[in-house]
Image (cartoon, rainbow, N blue to C red; front, side, top):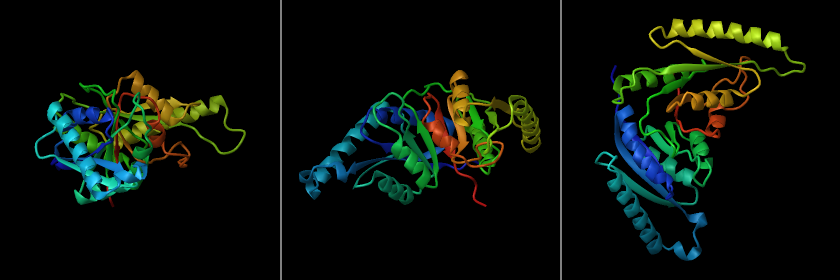
Amino acid sequence: MEIKEMNVLVAMDMSPMDEALIKYVGIACKFYPLMKFTFLNNIKLSELPSEYKTAIKLERIAQSINEKIDEMISEAGTVPQGYKIEVSAMNFTETAFLNVSKKINAELAIVGNKQRLTGGGGMARKLIRMWQIATLLVPETFNEKPKKIIQAVDFSRYTSRINLVSQHIIQYNRLGIQKTDPVYVSKVSWQFFPGPGEKEIRKIIEEDTRTKKTRWLKEYPENEPLIVLPSTEKSIATTLAEYINDQRVDLVIMGVLGVSSLTGLFLGSVSNELINQESNACILLVRRIAP
């Protein structure tokens, strides 16, 4: 199975998160053949005082940021040679990242998913919706010696892509990881009141568990058996997040969007909700294979 080398865009924001991302690059290279790295920081013009918006001062600011990022990369010693640093100056950081990702033909973006550091994940969530490349969300609390990977399976259009990426990681990784566990959350949702009773819900979930395990075995016979997590009251994302934390999962591979219940109705993005859950795991959001 041939694995294509990938161009990678890394999101810098001049916070302590930058050092964590630079450090994680070395780990990411052990998961997948990542070819070239471009580190991008955007000077948000809308937040600068007017006296700093002259061409000369913007150039000086950009040079200072460039030197700082280069210094951090050199000190970390985790980034392969041939990396580039880009510093843009735009009102909207999302636009800057979209422009550069197209320019360098990026196939993967590595973005911080802050857990204890100051700052939200607003930009990451916007970028995930806007661009058409895979995105790896990295918390500053990541495990430096990752061992456990799971596939968040929902039997949507993303499942085949999730499985393909998982197989690539098993084939390539230099961390001794020999398997990825497929995990599916079985949940009943209904639109009308009153809903099914507890006994009926349990029966539906048991039947769904049998059906999905059989389907998984038929479609992916060479993979690990499907792990089914029943969920009655909690959301799919919360159930998945609890499993991730309990099992000390280091990397979750999942689709950007997917079905949210046994009804097949889209009631909200599980991936979007999972990002907001506290976790030490990295989340790799993949795009489906184009038809």
